[in-house]
Every structure is written in C-alpha cells, then in structure tokens.
Length: 375
View (tube, rainbow, N blue to C red):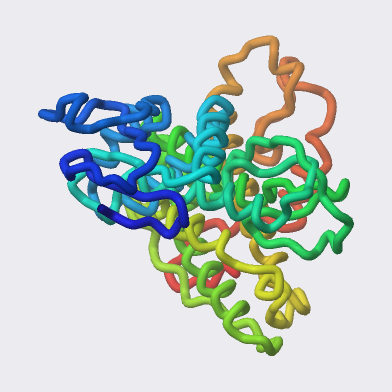
C-alpha cells in the first residue's frame, strides 16, 4: 500500500493484494493492468477517463526528468469539465469513507494516481476550510484551467488569497490569471516552436527584433531568474534590495532551450501554488521599479510570457503577410518600420498605438548578446 497525504485517499498498485480497509477501490489507469483479472483487483469502479491522455502517457514514459512537467500537463487535463466532475464525485466518496486509487505503474513516487490524490486533497481541504460557502469554487487546484461550482463566500479582504486560489473582485474564489496564463504558455509555446521550420526559428523578422531562437533563450534565462527572485522575496520578511540577474548566456539550439524551459516551467507551476498570502505580500526593492511584492512579480512573470508570445506570433505574421493578397487592406504589417512603402495593398490605417509606440520607445536589442543582463 502506498499512502497519500489525503486522510481518506490511499494509493495501491494493481499488483498488490487488496486489504479490508481499502474502502471504495477505483482503478485510475486508462489501460487495464496487464495480467490482472477482475476478481483479483476487486474494484468498485474503473475511472478510465481520469487517466492521462494517450499522448501525454506516451510522452511521459515514466521518465523521472519529465515528472515535473507531466504533473503540470496532467493537472491541466484534469481541469476539463468531464474529468473535474468525476473528481468531484470521487472527492464526495472520500468524504464518506476510504477511497483507494489503484494504478499499474511500477514507480510509486511518480505516477498519475499521485496527481489525482492531490486533486482530491484540494477539494477536501476547500470544504473543510469553508463548509458554508457558496459561489464559484476552483475544482482544479494546481494553478491551471479552473472549473467552477457554486458555494457562498463570506466577505473578506480581496488581498487575502494564495496563488493557488485567489478572491476576485466579486468576492468569489477564482483561478488566478497569472498561473492560468503561465500554464497555457506551456502548450502554446510548444505547439508554435514544434510546428515552425528550422530556418524560421533562426531568422529575425525585422532588424531590431529577436529571432525565435533568441526569444526561447531569453525565456529560459528569465524563468530561472524570476523563480530565484520570488524565492528570495518569500524567504525574507524584510524588504531587501532586489539582486540583479546573472549575465544572460548565449541562446542554445531552439529544441534544447524549449526542452529545458518546459522542465523549469513545470517545476515553477508545482511550487507557486504552495505560497500563502503572507508570503505573497513580502517583497524586495528595485532601484528602477520601487517596492515589488512576490504577488506582483508573479503577475509580471505571466505578462512577460504574453509579451514574448506576441513577439513570436508577429514573426509568424511576417511570413504570412506577403501571401494574403488583397486582405492586407484589413491588417497592418507586423513590423511597420521594417516594411516597404505602401504598395496600394497595404492598409492605410496606422499600426495599433501600443505596438507602434513600443517599437519606437523601447525597441528590443539588435542582438542577444552573451553577458547581457536583460532585467
């Protein structure tokens, strides 16, 4: 028997013998355990749809290096409406008595049953912390893809929230936008880079813009920088000076940078929801930006993701723009400063102010220079 940290939720390999105290036994594998008969498992239910998708299961392959990112991706899958509803029902069962999650994996420390147990624990903890609430309640507790159900929320300070479940302006618990954004970036960035031709990843869309390769190297550098920065903030109750980041290294090959960044982001998403309200209000002092709290730094972290996703999307637009014919009248060129004079097909209206002003006031460096301190 493998114990979980949930009071009424237990974990057991399918190849171990059932015990009288198992309670409600549920198989949480998508595939039936090889060599085990139905009579041997003594199941009360088979929650096949709670198992990780075939694509995710095959990608993971029980590789310890991929465990952190597997958890992040699997939590996102469990936030889908049908799965969230199944988890709600299973949590309700656990409130009534013991529930044993049966799994076939050999590794008791890295398997999907542990992630499911964590989801159940969060649901049980939310009920224990506020049994008389109504209003939207996050049903996915790992910081991504929240599904809401109704319960009441008493009046309280809207700043009194953890990263994992914050209180919105209407007094309702909701998934913080920052964590949802940071989790979504995992999927979006992976899809963009994997679908792009190699030459595109190395090419600058305009003279003063980074190539996708340079963007990926920068994201990896900033991921480590900001995680260390937030960790220093929450560890120190005093407003210490914000340390400068180490010099940025030269960007590696796009595939290598993406793989490293995915692993780092998985670890980040596993850690951030553990921070409490008091820790999030701690901060440090930047000579440029003044006092910055850990909460503000996390929000800026997510905004930074979006800023560079926009940069990558604009690079793709640059490749597509010459081929859309007369439809160019509908859209401004992605990088106006790098475009040739209007040929009659280009739109006469100006580029949206935010993009044009950013390009003129604060252009990115012409090169990603080794040793450059970006932040």
